Length: 187
Image (cartoon, rainbow, N blue to C red; front, top):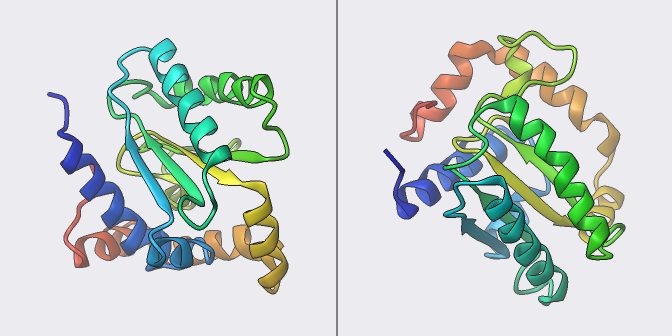
């Protein structure tokens, strides 16, 4: 069964608020969320080719929109790339599209997936939860915005390790509790 558009947005918004912002996994997310500068796109794509086309359009729109209106884009694709390995391989295509459009150095892509697994980690390592979203998603960010945020944040290089420490301290039980306390359970 295909999830409804509003259900996908609601689950992803909740994950962003409860996990990403609530656990401070990304200290830069709160400001763009509060300023409503996130473009939320739910792709109807059911093939990689259709997703690639949606990705092209989202990249072009973000690159040309004023940052005050759209500073970042979440391209959520619940019907394609459900398996993490296929999703991970698609990231090479996504980078190629970025280059094809001449947007290297302008935009970057962050990856999130319900079964995300960092290279070299065990599948059940709770540290993987930092990139586990309710649905497969490509997060498009403006390089200039990332650079400004990193410059303003003390020890930005330590965010990754701090997230690992936070999640390992919480464990899976604490991770689930953080999501459930705000009304969502992991899929």
